[in-house]
Amino acid sequence: MSPPAPPAIQFQNVSKSYRNGQVRALDGVSFDIHPGEFFGLLGPNGAGKTTLISILAGLARASGGSVKVLGHCVVDDYAAARRALGVVPQELVFDPFFSVRETLRIQSGYFGVQNNDAWIDELLAELGLSDKANANMRQLSGGMKRRVLVAQALVHRPPVIVLDEPTAGVDVELRQTLWKFISRLNREGHAVLLTTHYLEEAEALCQRIGMLKQGKLVALDRTSALLSGKAATMLRFKTDAVLPAELASHARVTGRIVQLKAHDASEVEGLLARLRAAQVPIEDLEIGRADLEDVFLEIMQGASA
Ligand SMILES: Nc1ncnc2c1ncn2[C@@H]1O[C@H](COP(=O)(O)OP(=O)(O)OP(=O)(O)O)[C@@H](O)[C@H]1O
Ligand SMILES: [Mg+2]
Image 1: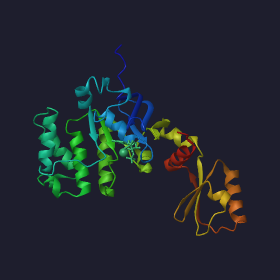
Image 2 (image 1 turned 180 degrees about the vertical axis):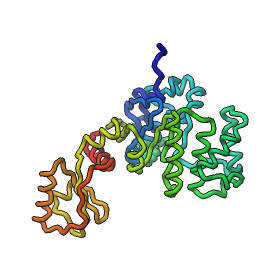
Image 3 (image 1 turned 180 degrees about the horizontal axis):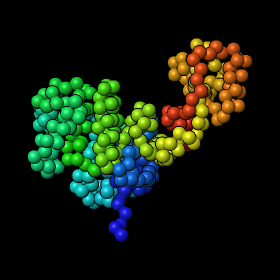
Image 4 (image 1 turned 90 degrees about the vertical axis):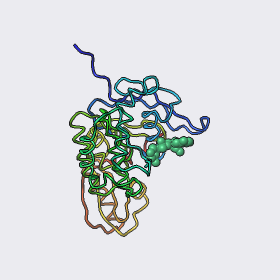
């Protein structure tokens, strides 16, 4: 029997402090990403997502713990670990003087990949960049630069793809193109680690989700288990009225839209009775399943860091 395949990524008790320990960006984070898995890493601003990815990519050094990519330690076996990874960074960094094609050829050379033009052409086509191949990087719009960053991360066909908010500031069409392409690569066996603040994206794409809060892993489960585990039913409606305080304190309010958790039908009836008693006029009432945003908010409010 062959030994089991190593995890695509293994985080073991990873810690990171900045400013002599005054900032604890990561505090004992442990989890694995399985081979071929599409994994979502979620958390509010400053939770530590980019710090974890920087340590994974060898751009920052952990204060404690270890990280392996396909069994290769990112410190002791940096070259092998880095070669297995394609990282799309959160920040747009690029050399303004090269064209798109030159940028991708240089990146191929960095990984020692020769004669890569057929794959570069496919990347350009898949990411809607074919007509920009000869444009200088500085002539591109922000969303187009982000497409180049994605192409750059994929030039050496890495088995593990890491995307740190790849759709921030990206238009609807590219998001769809990007997800179609990344899903194809995932089906072909590439593991994907994604961070995003668009929770409907994570819900649609990720098989498993981890949530960070103030540097600690506060949730780790299959997406379907997260969705069915917490308050599974939501009452949604629109109103211009102010909610009574006891309802407002646990409502999710977005403009005119109000969402209230209910665990079962009798709780729904109870909520409706209280709204009627408080004479809150209601429009467009719906009863639906909780989505990942509901689950995320519940976990973030409940988790003590
Ligand atoms: N170079 C640094 N020096 C000092 N503190 C830092 C540094 N980089 C990050 N931090 C701090 O570490 C914490 C985690 O930041 P990080 O960028 O990892 O968060 P994030 O989860 O990626 O957030 P976002 O969703 O905003 O991208 C924050 O408190 C941040 O201020
Ligand atoms: Mg970040």
